Image (cartoon, rainbow, N blue to C red; front, side):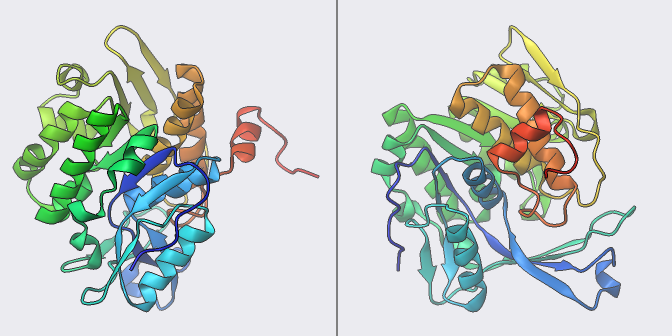
Length: 319
């Protein structure tokens, strides 16, 4: 079963698993938590919502169970203005679930409950060539390529259609070693990285994939632009000729999860709007800073007006 299509033209297409999130309340560690907040998370969903709040029309293709958690995810995405016409409900698989905490001053503990989930049922049949052909950008992560053989085939099909249509392809490796060993990640990511026009990667991911934190490894595989995210040390962007850097924003660190996806959404928004490279890096840093200063993956994602106010160093209180 699929949803009705949105009326606005789609700028960005992404595909992958979106899950329900149970986040331990307050600063309690998961083992001691007695209450949890229900929300939504998942790399592609985070980027889709981030771009939607920044004013872009995004289509997200995923599979959800015909269950209450699937209803929660679908309602959240639809409420954020994401085009969910490509969402398929699956009767015999549950919606994936993340259970985690955000304890102050301690590492985050994350539990994934996604084995046999509806998200892994995503396949080539969920890829709509005409939508990709009409979009400006196809955004992918390595997570979808690693979830299952069928989702891997869906990603390859999406890339093939994007290449044929001249649609720009961006890739964020988003390595999660719980999904498979490093060698398997290299194998699955190689065709995506060779097809990518833009790669947004963490410094540690680049080291794991290539053996060195050198963006030339990605440029040599065909990427026109490489953005390297380096946590508290900020980020930099290069096309092999010039390099630009941005410092991480100085904000209270409440919850570090989702910062990379938020940075990607901020950067891609700048690229879609044609702003200068330094400006899009600055915007990405602002969007990421908003997310780490709030609990959960989605609550801190700013609107375009909020992003711009922070870039202008607006007053702390708007009256």
